[in-house]
Length: 194
Image (tube, rainbow, N blue to C red; front, side):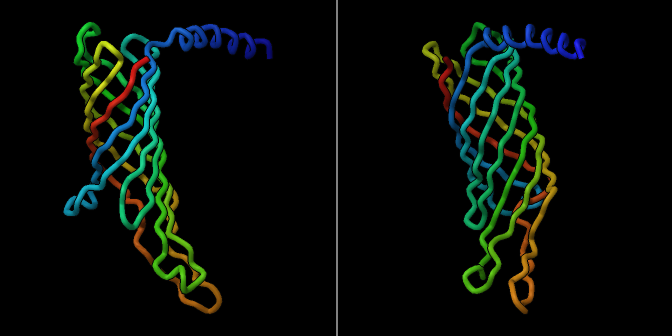
């Protein structure tokens, strides 16, 4: 028991100063496009993100993102935790980045017959991994403007695409609202570093 407490104290002694001396904190918003490989013939969907980034070292940061994917028939939301590695010169305004992360997805689509029957909606939950490259311009006053492109893969753990309609009614089969497989995305963002 004392060994575990000692290990936690040693870990806290290492982590707390690192967080307290964290490099710049960045908060921002972005607009982008995403397209799954399964839907490569169709149009890409618009995305909106909010994100926050905390520097751990001079070249390594962690970033949390919340994303909404615009689709007329779906409500898709995701959260992603990313490692951000700065590849470029610390003294310049332009900084190339490498990003890699893991996240969770949730999609729901209203059932077209929900007003007529007891069915409510189709729902799917999944996870994704993604990685890519980006480039940021960091102004002297803290303004950051950037762009990145990413490739990812999604797996769907729960997929509720068959909903019973109630007493004596037949079930409806609907398309899975969250596409499993590879996807690609690109985004432009603006942020403040402080």
